[in-house]
Length: 127
Image (cartoon, rainbow, N blue to C red; front, top):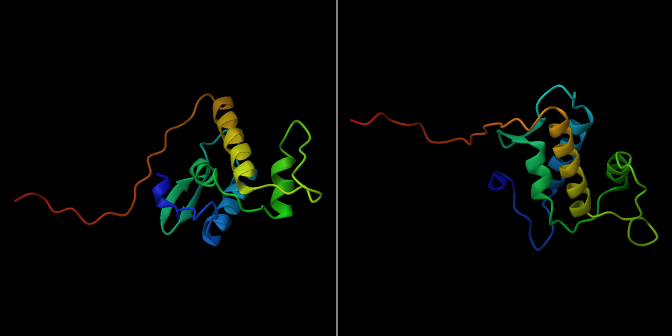
């Protein structure tokens, strides 16, 4: 399903995927624990936030500090980034968020399976 999202290029995500990551993070923040996994839309497709986080697992780009704060405030242990600026890669942020999504789904009594379809050509009945 990650093929519905733009690919990484040598470890770098296109800006559209970085923006989708931000939307997925906001959707997680607003997630009511009694509902199924939040979704975001990309080019008319409905995408569960876990797939956005999964798509960013190998991204080496540096996360903006406002997103770093949104991720680290959910951790139970202090986080120290690399270098003097406490930088975090999207890969690290995505892995953290993916674990948090799984934990939330398990806490809700198991992961709900969501069917996601992509736009297809109109089917004609066989003649």
